[in-house]
Image (cartoon, rainbow, N blue to C red):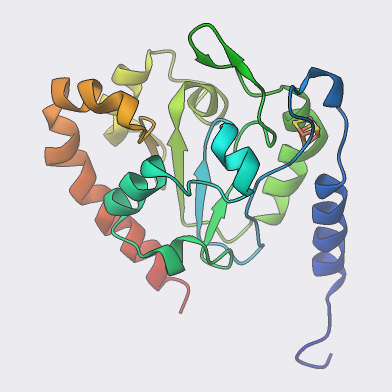
Length: 204
Ligand code: SF4
């Protein structure tokens, strides 16, 4: 097969990605309408499994292009260039479109995404070396055996499957959580940086 030829698996993936971009499955529940925001490529070595886009991300179409993203890149020790390279890092929230806001912040991710798309996409991401599971919704899905609250789940990060690290959301709204849990910066973040660099090196 010529070097640049599209394989059947790649063609299937491209078709899937195009279908996701056109999705209007739960548009009646979305206050600003559908705009799936995700970054995927079958060559990705790291998966960032998050919650759902916020309003700002809905407007820009760029995931984590905000203070939360700045902090997350700092936690990982990666540049914006690396972060937004889909052949290195996949960003796949539990819900792909902005779900709206309730009394205490953004609403939960729309459940339709998981059944319609997310499982299929994950089947194509078969080169992952590291999965970062951010926030309770993603942790409930990716770490179903850990029936703990977010703090306990993150604190028990050493007991997670190899290659899976639970994280709190890097939002400035979690500054108090970070202050109350100094072990996170002291023991988890150095390991997170090390695991990130190891996974990126596996790209070579
Ligand atoms: S949230 Fe998911 S299921 Fe709903 S319209 Fe967006 S991509 Fe489709």
